[in-house]
Structure formats: C-alpha cells, structure tokens
Length: 312
Image (cartoon, rainbow, N blue to C red; front, side, top):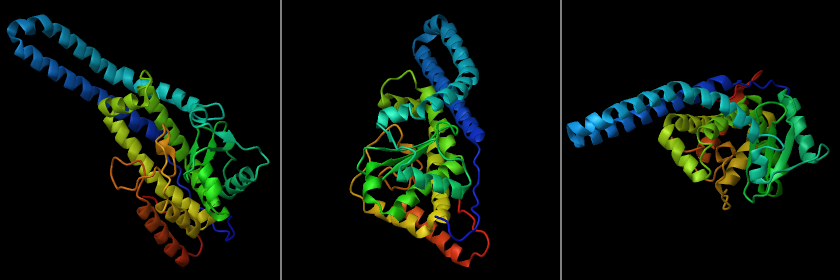
C-alpha cells in the first residue's frame, strides 16, 4: 500500500471518444464492404454482356443504394446504441462474463475484497461492486464494467494460488488502475460494440471472422486500445505498490508455462500468453512493459513531489 504520501496522477480516458472511433470504423468498414460487393457485381454483369447489364443493372444499383444508406445510418446508430446495451449485459454479477467464465464472487469480508477496497481508497475512487475469481490455472486477471453498479475485478485461480502477497497486490492495483482511468469502461463499451455488430452469429469464430471482414478499422482500434492501456495501468500500479512488485509479476509471466486458454474476454485480461510485437496483438510484449517500468523506477528515484505516469 502507499506509504510515501505522494499524489498519483491518473489520466482519465474518454469513453465517448472510444465509442465514436469504433462507430466510425464500423461505418467505414460497412461502406468498404458495399463498394467491394458493388464492384464484384459490376464485373459479373460486364461478363454477361449488355443483356446481363440491362436485366441485373437496376437491381444491383438499388441494392448498392440500400447498402450505402445502411452503412451511413443504420450501422453507426446500431453500433452506438446497441453497443451500450450489450456492454451493460456483459458485466456485473449476472452478466455474460460471469456465466461464460464461471466467476465466483468473494464476500464483503474476504481478505482479497478488503485489500481491493484499501487500494481503491489509495486511488481515491469508489470501491468496485464485485471482486471475484475464475477457475483457470494461469496467472491472470481482468476488470470489467460500465459504471459503479456493475464494475468488477476478477483474478484467476492461478494468480491467487501462485503469487506472493505483494505480487497479488500489484495485480489488483493494475486492474484497479484500469478502473481509475476509465479503461475498464472503455474496453467494456468497445466489446459491447463488437457484440452488437456480430450478435446474429452464434459461434465465436464466425463472429471474429465477420468483424475482420466488415469492420476491420474498428477491430484494429480495439487492438491498439488494448495494447496501450497496459502501459498506463502498469505505471499506476507501480505508483501504488512499488514498481519492483509489478516488475516481478511480469517477470514471472515471462517464465510462465501455463498459457491462458482463448476466451471471449482475452483482450480484457492482464496477459494473453503471447509476447510478439504486432499491430494485430491484443497485448504489448512483456519485455516492453518491464522496460517501461524500469524507466519509471529510475525516474522515481529522481522525483521529489509528484511522479508522472508513463503513458505509451
């Protein structure tokens, strides 16, 4: 816990900006899909000669006009409004995440709940509504929620069983940092927009393919957001419990042999099991996160009053 009395600087990230960027990405993706479909149809009609163009031309142009209207109006409205609805359904004690992952929530008197509340006090934020765990052997954790009533921080069984007390506090601090700077709400809303755009597909694999086909810009923005937010959360956790404890957690993950299983909530997790640097990755490499924390630790030694959070 904090003992030096210095203030923690926390940059509040805009939920609205995230929703707008993803909605614009969905709209542009729908427009691109419409133009590609139109171009392929035109090539097909050209191959059929003048008669094919006369018969099918009006139909193709009519469908193209409809697709443009849908891309400009229906897609952004659905992404924004239904995205908020799906985001609300995913979090909380009875949300889809709790059902899919089989989350068990701690009682108010549990030691981990108490430690979490102490950390929220240190951060100057409201206590999260729920603290729980899911039955998975790897070291992992995530935060989720759209507002104070359904916010939650969840640890894996592996994190609880295999981390020291200081390391476990660092993981909790990391997840609560996502809550404090609005990353939790941003990612939950982002995931809600994803679900809204692919809700009609039942299988997760099909949903993932559909999002890359029809909303590639939105998908890339979510991946970028998922990567950059980890550096900010690491920095806040370092201020809260000490950079050495956060570094020790990441170093332990570098040696980890139990890899997380893919879930619908992989981009919310602290770690996804892969360390390659790529614009298609959900997380930055562990070595990059450790290097950022080591730089932060060196800066802390020279600081006097206030320590700024390194944000990538």
